[in-house]
Image 1 (cartoon, helix red, strand yellow):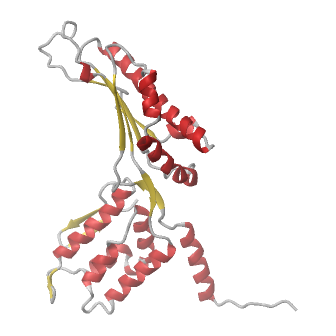
Image 2 (image 1 turned 180 degrees about the vertical axis):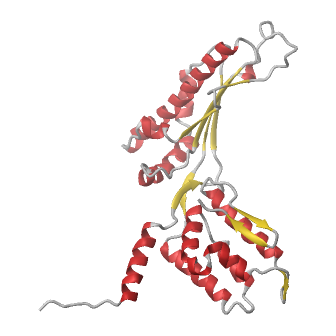
Image 3 (image 1 turned 60 degrees about the vertical axis):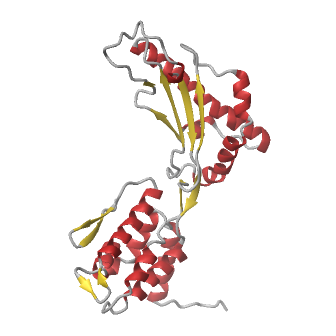
Length: 293
């Protein structure tokens, strides 16, 4: 005889809630702003754009550049195709202030191509060492090319004749900056704990523990965390409604709430910034406003 398990409506709601939360957990790839980026800057002779072979060999053996790309591979592998990976490689070039604009644009774009190919060469070398090769189309999708016109001619005061002014060596370069990426964010259990801490700190909302509320919100790591917590607090009016119901106007037994409100705003904006977004929280009068997509 088959065993029949009866589930109540609350049981089903709890199961569905858990499954939905697992799918929307706030863990995501972000730029690691606490670690240093690695940069390469190459100077070119006038009108040149190819990188010297000896210099290229030195760069290919640069352990810092190799390591930062190697450490990024697990994150790329896990999140590629999701549209969540931030562009962590920046490439650009500059031309001298002399010469025609069209000529500068042509040289500038070729220098950018040289820098792009250099990244491909480093990844090829990394593949030779690890046995795993990253496709050029994959890594190119994670690059930012500066500027809109793909090159930047240095400035020259308009009183000077470009055709006669001698070019400066330090104006002609290409550069690469690779920023470290990592995963951040709270899983479903982390969001649950955060919600419980907030509700426990609120209590009957007669004299809520504002310090615990501030500390709990400071644990948000990403924009996705903010969205998940906002959803968990929907019965409280969302994250914004909850904050404004407990961090009240004027003075309480603990003094003015403005300091707590400022700390909460900073924590929310920090988590949003980790995900590459701008400031989404601000203080309007005596309440906090949070703008979510």
